[in-house]
Every structure is written in structure tokens, then in C-alpha cells.
Image (cartoon, rainbow, N blue to C red):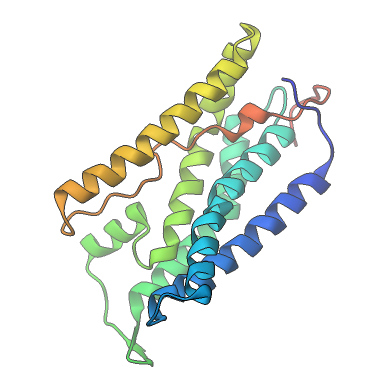
Length: 216
């Protein structure tokens, strides 16, 4: 590919900028509490909109690091085992926590034992708490990563990796626009998340570095 490996410093910088953007989004979202349209409200709206690059950058960095670590031949079974050890413990812990603990009116209490149906729903959709959807998105990336790499290699060998990147970029835009339009037509009773069901392959900007033996 046409990008070269530059070490972990660049990915750490991108992750740090994305983390600051996440904080900016959650702080500036309080513009709805400002009663009048003034400079502060307009500034908050601008920050809230412009800082939404945070999650795509996190996904990109995750794909970048995975593509660098698992360059060349590797065991898919070992890959899935390592990813499961990384992502499942915190996801299961916080899903259980938010299912069992209720926060209402500034008080914290026990919400009761959830039904099996509710537990399955929370694990599959990440809706035990709003922010857990990010876990589900990363899990999708981990599950599909071997296929993403195979697809990338196929297009790269054909000299069409840039075409693939641009095509996925256009699909991403169409998906987001379609999700918002569908949500607006269906009304507030139906929720559409604009994130694509298949994470856009951040490993398309795969760092170029020498092949190495299977990762151990």
C-alpha cells in the first residue's frame, strides 16, 4: 500500500486526539441547556458537530494496529483468543453492572435480576448502557478482521486498493444518510444507528513494513 509504517507514535497521537474529541463532544452537548442563542451556544454546537470524528479515528487506529501486528501469516484461532481476552472481560463486566444497577434521580440502587431475554439483548446490542455500543462495534471489527485483510490483499494485488478505499468511503456516506432519512421517516419509535453494520476497513491504510513470521 502507499502508506509506510512509522511506528506506534502516530497511532498514539491519533488516539489521544480522538480521546480529547470524545471529551469535547460530551461537554459541548450541553448546548441544549443554554436558553438563548449566543456565542457560547454557537461555539458549543460547532464543537459538538466537528468533534464527531472521534469514533471513526478510534476504529481507524484499531485497524491500523491490528494490520501492523498481524502482517503476514498468523493463526486466526490465536487472533480471536487474544482479542477475546482483551475485549470480553470489560464488556461482560460493565454489561452486568448496568443491568443490575439503576441510577435514577441522583440515587443508585439495585434494579433487580434481569430476565434471560434482556441479558441476551444487552449482550448482542450493547444497550445495557448507551456508551456500550462501542464495544459491539469493536467486536464486529475483530470478528471480521481476517476477512477484511483477505479482501484488502485481493484488491491490493490487483492494484485497486485505492479504488476500494474510495468505494467504502462513498458507501459509508450513503449508509449514514440513509440511516438518518429512515429514522426520520419512521418516527421516534424506531431507532437507527448510523454506524454501518460492517466497520469500514481501517486496515486499507495498512502500514507498510516487512513481512514477518506468524505472531506468537
